[in-house]
Amino acid sequence: MMKFSVLTLLISLLLLTGWNSAAASDFFEEDTVTVEVKGTNADARFDPVVVSVNPGDVIQFIVREGFHTVTAYHPANRRPKRIPDTAKPFDSGLMEQGDQWFLNITEEGMYDYFCLPHEKLGHVGRIIAGSFDAADDYPEEGIPNVALQKLSTKTEQFLNNK
Image (tube, rainbow, N blue to C red):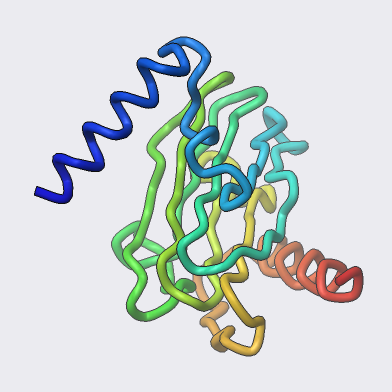
């Protein structure tokens, strides 16, 4: 019954605000963090590379150019596990310019992710949900060195600027 009430509320809001002008971010407001997905080859990148959120927040990924994925480091995606133990693996599938995808972060911890077509070029990102102290020691085997170095460098810069 609760799902029906929430669905009815969302439909009502869409009708009131106008279907064409409503975006998912309108409903999440300040609980939504935006990450732009940019570049086409060697310049492929998530912007920003490292974001900090609270469990329950939503991350909106917007593809500005090229073809990209947002894929969790997890055995379900044929990679080492680099997300919290209780978190579900994610994969946006292939997206192109103008596409957007939303990820709801439900568990505290550190989430590392990559772009499948550009991982070997260092197209990676990191989500810190809650305290950075909650971060685990993640395996490095099976991840390109350029990706590991970028995650390390960008996380250090992020923490120094907090």
